[in-house]
Length: 164
Image 1 (cartoon, rainbow, N blue to C red):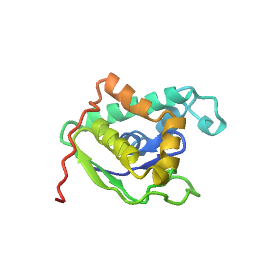
Image 2 (cartoon, rainbow, N blue to C red):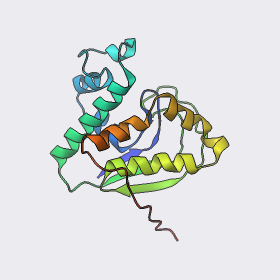
Image 3 (cartoon, rainbow, N blue to C red):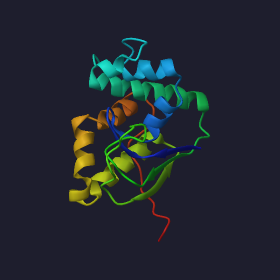
């Protein structure tokens, strides 16, 4: 079971299952390599010098590698509460601006993160504006497009409500 807190992310636009398994499962050196798209094996992402889409692609590639190693028997769960534009890894995250949406789960992390992004865009426009802007400014959905392109998963999903 991979349990993630879906929220915004300073570099990725958003963080969910893909971000959690790529960054969360990586060693310190692996985190560095993902953050700077393989350019250097130091903390260089803090100093810039990376191309945004390359970082997003590195994150998708790392997540696919880890998921391939884990096999098919993995359940991915994203909890969509306390939605802020910032990641939990931020020492001073922005306060949450969105209402709790709920818990989404899938065997396909790409579809799961896509469904969560779609829930952000379906939410109250005023409350979700900052998070939508963060996703767009960081081109966050490129992670989903690239993950699908490399065969990590599909963005297609069927949302099934179980609380009715």
